Length: 228
Image 1: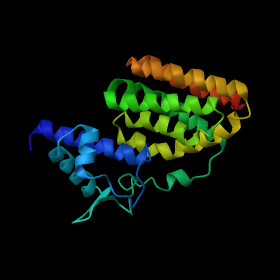
Image 2: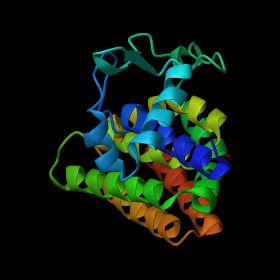
Image 3: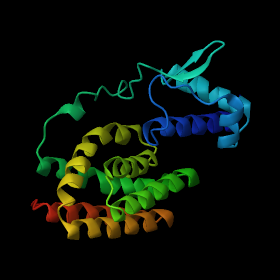
């Protein structure tokens, strides 16, 4: 296989993985759409799709069942390479969690602005706008906010950053619960996310880094967390 074709297959494999981990379109045990349907959706050839599926099957993300189709593995383990599965179960207080976000997420936004593909940017903006709609409609936004931040991490193309996201989810979850009682924090979230999305859309890495840092500092201030 030519290098260009291999890179395309790897990119498609990443898109399918994002459908599982970020979009939550498929759960363990679910069957993928048939080749014709999925290749048309992704706008690729069936040959490229088959290679992408082989890549994911080699990493135990997908399972190919002869004569039946391709399924999401029942024993999917996205943490196997780094052995961080227990990390997300550590009980940390809210200050520790937000300090963790302040250390990592601004740089995540920085590299996402530099490295995101057009499709990844589209996914980030989709979740950012969807979260704002949920806030304005007074609907639970926890999963959408996690997807927004996860899609930014995914766009760094740094797998270790992705492995850290489960613990960052803890801070997001707690932050959403506490901020729902504070109208000022909710408004700041909307404005901060708009700013982050604008810098990312413009591929302004320094701006995205600064906007993410301000977003987390605003959240910490709203929650009464000292960031000195």
